[in-house]
Image 1: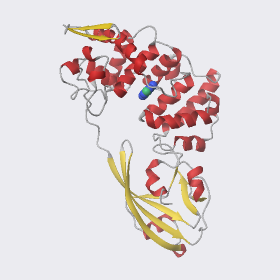
Image 2: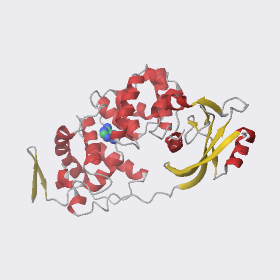
Image 3: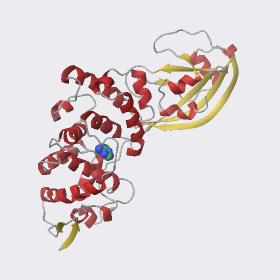
Image 4: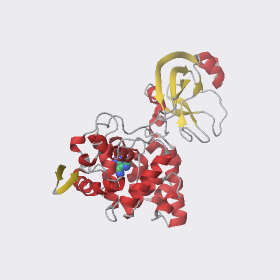
Length: 370
Ligand code: ADE
């Protein structure tokens, strides 16, 4: 029988017939002991208030911890309370989110903050169901806020946790499936402790982030769950978790224009719903276009053109789409007469492009050339 000691906790593992529940129940002690020693010091952990936990968890979806830190600190400085977020100016909110991507997360944060002010007196609801009812909050975020901020006994199963749990139990089920996630949530709900629920959930997340890593070889030698982990024992950590192939990204060609006078540049606010809605953008057209055709399509009179310059190609990867871009700089002698109104392009001073208007990262390769 194999034995392992961690901080005085004896972990016995010889029973291959152990049920999934018993296996997961046995993780609790070593996992919590490991977390006490290894939890990273992160800005949102120092005071796990509901608002801080919520904002950090939303930022951490799709974004790495190191990238999130400065965004989180700036966000808390400018919007320190639910109420200040509910009253946030949309452009300012998007400017603070600029570069994090998945901007609907920020729009939903504000929508949820407004509801929290209208229905919950300016705090977040303190039940799992109440949290789940808010825009942008799914089962993972509801469980994370409920357990970390309120100490409630609710699971928080994200991609990290699914990877850890499917390895520990050597499950070959597809972790991309909602049904598999629901099953794992139900399983954790059965086995998780009554107390220290926030630490328990974060310990699972943390091992997933720094030990049972997604890319490359997991650091099984550093893992508090090693002796209980069936994938490690059977040499299956490369094969598990199983994640069925995602659909290939659609590739779209676009032409991006820097339409400039000596000190101003043309931009437009994107309208409606969907990708990048309510952010600003550099003028851009579907497909790869020549400068002259672009001027026609954008309604810029040719007589104002001083110089046209081809800019390097660039690409940007969104979750489901890839933009393959080419750029064209059009230097104009003066600002043309243009209709004004919502959704129509307008000229801004070049410095303001940096300080005031949120522009998605997709345009960064060309913004740098302004
Ligand atoms: N990733 C998602 N949630 C996290 C958290 N609370 N701490 C560290 N990494 C995370």
